[in-house]
Length: 403
Ligand code: CTP
Ligand code: MG
Image (cartoon, rainbow, N blue to C red; front, side):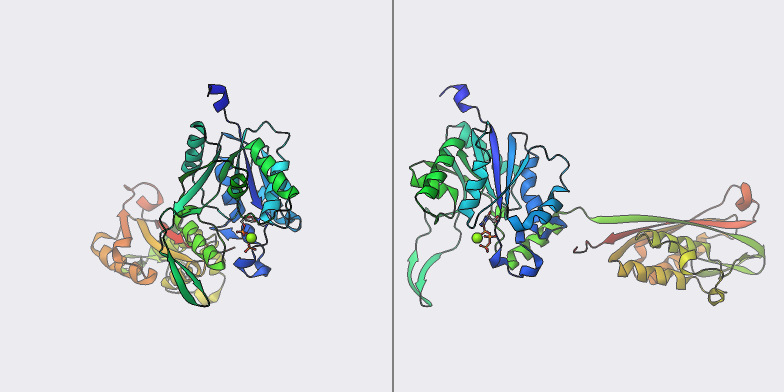
């Protein structure tokens, strides 16, 4: 064969017109539009084709009742120029033919036909199919060896054991030279044969040699509700963790007095912090940092200084409230760090007690709680002992919620 005969211009047909009856719960809609880690199954199935520069036109075959659902999928795709939508038929075979017909006027030499219900197709599997075509294959089937011992049974009783040697489970995408598969599909339709469950069977029926390449266990088809649940777990595990950081800042004025409360610990001092509550700048900054991780406003929104209820309140109440808000939003606190900026009193001797108090309030290990302190080198209001300031940072891991 010459180089030009090996030249391949790929198109893809992704069939998504099924009703997903075996996946159950019709009120949740067809399985290809259900969410996997926050993304519709069909969107995930299209992704490897959208990302693959070798593939030109991508035909998505949808059900006529699903136009609104499909618009939702389209809205998550920035570059739609290669996408074509057509409506499918009552059987998978008819849907594939509708997709192939839509490619008739394209310049595709090869086509990859894929189930929308397989959202875990890898780029390397497409590479293996392409490599087989490069070697001159006419049709390519990704398949996996059957791992289980197979039995033939009827009436609840085994009649024989089937050797699994030479048995493979067929996956998609199945690859074909475009013109012959279009012709084979049309012929099957013209002959009234509607019993083909995959496209290789149609190619086989007209004598096309189908080459097997190694499939991928992960590229399994979502058929039942249980498959969807398992796939969702996989997708969630693969999704980027939802880790959020919040910061907080607070300052309170120093007045004559007998002590200050910082990070939940009472320290004897010749001044006091003035404020509506116990004026614990460290815990106020921490409260804001926690609230910030879930967009829950700031301490003033939750505990208005105008409210008499909070007069003289121990600031751990504010922290506990923020902890509850974070937990309700699905967050797990990973760590928190408070920096105190004060000329006096000396914080060092009380650091461990402060960290213990934090650990207790936040419900996390002490090694995840940090308190640091610095003077302000006698500069500014802190340096003149007019006030104490605090910064805090909190990191929270949020569970992704089902939409
Ligand atoms: N398919 C299609 N048109 C049909 C039937 C199926 O495009 N008339 C598509 C499905 O959307 C799916 C793929 O073919 O992506 C494989 O079919 P299957 O897993 O059987 O999906 P459904 O037919 O939707 O499910 P069920 O058989 O459980 O109803
Ligand atoms: Mg089906």
